[in-house]
Amino acid sequence: MNIILLGPPGAGKGTQSQRLVENHGMRQLSTGDMLRSAVKAATPIGLQAKAVMERGEFVSDEIVSALIDAELAAMGEGVGAIFDGYPRTAAQSEALDEILAKHGRKLDHVIELDVNEDALVERITGRFTCANCGKGYHDTFETPRQQGVCDKCGSTEFKRRPDDTEETVRKRMGEYRGKTAPILEPYDERGIVTRVDGMAAIDDVTAAIDAVLS
Image 1 (cartoon, rainbow, N blue to C red):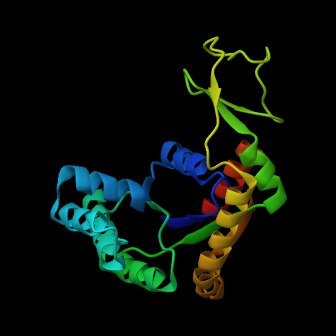
Image 2: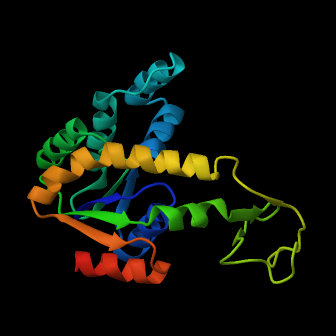
């Protein structure tokens, strides 16, 4: 089974992708991860991508498509794919259809984690982590049992991501809506889009996605 998992930053795509990997044996194809891996391994595609990035340019659709093509070829037929961060444009969605067909595959589902913008802002801006062990907390939903002391390691040092601000989150939401709308319409016409409540509890989101795939 091959699916696209969509949602704005902070919607929980990473968590749900990992659960699909663990529970269904699927492979998460993150374009960012694949690019970094290809550059590090100095593959022909990686060297090409590195040269582009060193010039300060965006990696082309052709390079990204070549990465996905190579990854699908290496995966074998029995493993399902989760596309994360791709496609982002109508042109990329057309390229993905062609790549899948080349490998005897088709796109089965497009799952969008639907979120409330104000609630997502609260979710993201309230996040912080222990600076020592990395355990995650939240100002509202999960505070340390003892204020200022990590439950896991006892450290008193915490940190927040500098881009977890309301202004940044709302900007990313706007960019997501602007870029995603053009690719969702043709998938909607094909009847393969399902919207899942991304604001629900993590286990409930997992159950809803499993119901779509069953």
